[in-house]
Length: 336
Image (cartoon, rainbow, N blue to C red; front, side, top):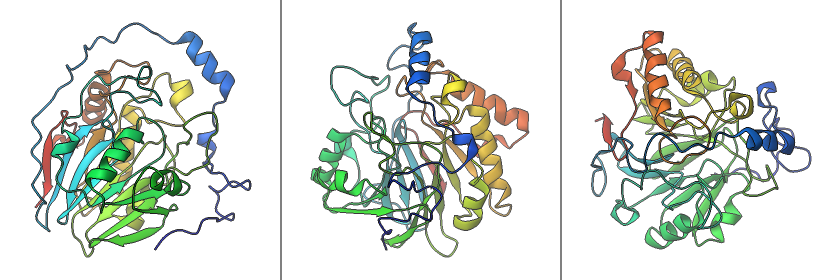
């Protein structure tokens, strides 16, 4: 199935044909606030040197994992290879050196992609959370379209035309709470609190998280995407779970006065995992941390998010084995 192109009765659909966050916590910051942030931005070099974040040798399964398995490989930032139910799923693919519309400026990678694009196993599904440059990368889209022409791309409303015009043959749009059956998986778009836009025009396409599950109690994962804190995580677990793991962003959060509507901080991320776990008491939930240590997007030191996340996890008294902060390239067999 695919979503209807226009649903004006939905709270996240703007009457002018754009999209919006329907929660009071999501009040957007305008240009004046952005300029205020830029005027006070701490531009000292990051304490971490490029290439020095923790890393590991990737160990995905070629060509595909077993039908009962769930395996994650962190390639960097929000790019994961999720091998689930014998299907290879790629999230927010980003292989370029800069998160930018140009090659000579913009945030540059501190860590290279942990798995070369040419070394990927055959990709069956690509999940795109939104259109920001650190998540939707034009050269990567073109390379994947050429290398994996049969992959099906699932995108939020408003992105299919952009994707298809870059060479992708199979793409479909979903709205929040829509689901699709693909390659034996149940894949669904779920709410997130963020915004979209690759320039001054904002919110002409939607943003979302994604759930991926093997039906009838098989492996399941929740890719949160980019988000601030909003009140529907419990509902997502109840309606689309239970999950074996939730991939939750922990970086790009300072200064809080500016970033809070769009990005979780580590303490909020741990709270999100707790809310999800509380809604599925009969299946342990692994928190998988992402969106840190790859690009310098905001003011906190690159190495700070894991430290704060571990501290918040320990302070909450949660089981240490249920927190995974992967090294770049690390592979984990979550199930099967």
